[in-house]
Image 1 (spheres, each protein chain N blue to C red):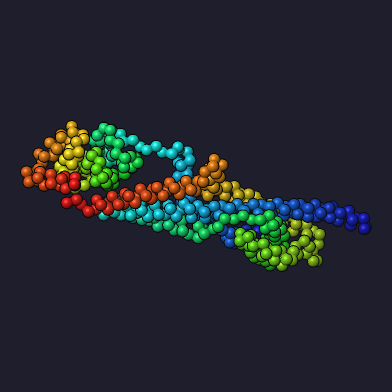
Image 2 (cartoon, chains in turn green, brown):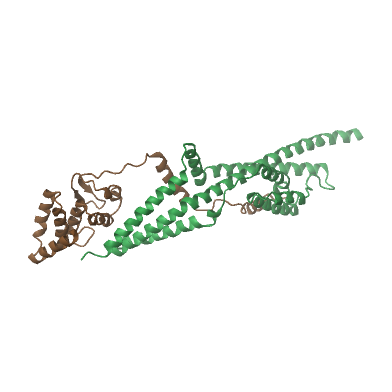
Length: 259
Length: 169
C-alpha cells in the first residue's frame, strides 16, 4: 500500500523540482529583460531630453520666425490662401514649442551604476508581479515594482535596498498547499513569466525601431566619425533662424510701400 | 487564483510610471531628416547664380543679367525655387538697397509687370534708371527704360528720375 503511494507521489515530486528550477531560470531571464527594458527606456528618454534641449528648442525658435514671416505675408497679401498658411504656420510653431519645452525635455542623462543594476535585477527576480500567488500579493508586488522602477530611474539604490528588505517573499511555499496545487501554481507562473518575457522582447524591438532610437543611432554613428550630431544640427538650425530673421526684416520693409 | 487579464492591466499601470518617450514623434523625425541631410551631403557649396532666365514658382521668368555674382544673393538663391514671388522680391529689394544692379533691374521689372507688388511704372522707371546709372547691363536696361517711358507722362519721368537720384545718394 505504501509502495503504491510512493510511486504515485514520486513523479510529482520530481516534476515539482524540475518546475521549480525552470521557474528560477525564467525568473532570472525575466529580471534581466526587465532591466534591459528599463535601461533602454531611460537611455532613450535621456537622449530625447538632450535632443529637445539642444535641438528641439531651436526648432521651436525657427518655427516662431516662420510663423511671423507667414503672418507678415498674409498682411501683405491678405488672400484666403496666405491667411490659411499663416494660421498653419502659427499652429506648427505652437506645437513645436510645446514638444520642445514639455516635460520630456527635462529628462537628464542616465548612467546606472553596476550596484544599482544588481539591486534592480534582484528586485525584479523576487518581486515581479508575474509571480504573485493571489490577488492581494499581486497588489503588493505591483506597488513594490512600480516603486522600484521609479527608484531605479532616479538612481536611488537606498530605496531599492529598502524594497528588497521589506518585501517578504512568501510565494515559494504556501501553507497547507498540496504538491499538486503547488505544481499547478508553478506551471502557471512559468507560463505568465514566459509571456511577459515575450512581451518585453516585442517592446524592446519596437523601442529600437522608434524615431528616438534611430536618431540616437545616427548620433552614435556620427560620433564614431568624430562629429557631434546634436551640435551640427543646432548649428544648421541657427543658420536657418538667422536667415528667417533676415527674411522677416526684409518683408517688414516691404510692408511699408515705397513712396 | 490569478486573473491574467487583470494582471496585464496592473502591469500596464506600473509601466506608466516609467519615463517613456512622450513627445510626438514628428519633432524627432524632423531631426532625423535634417541629420540625414547634414551627414550625407558634403557641406553645401555656395549656389552660383545662373545667368539668363530665372524661373520662379509662379511660372514667371525673370531676366537675370549674366555674371551676376552679388555676394549677398548667393546663399539665398535656392529660396527662389521654393518660395513665392513676393517672398523672393523681398530679397531682391534688400539686395537692391545694398546696391546690387541685377536686383535693381529685377525690381524694375517687378514694378513694370506688377509681380508681387502693385504695378507702378514710376517705380519701375526709377529702379531701371538706378540700374542704368551704375553702368552695368546697358543693353538690358536701355530697352527696359524705352518700354517703360512710353507709359509715363513727362511729369512722372521727372518724378522717377528724382527718386532714382535720391536712392543713389
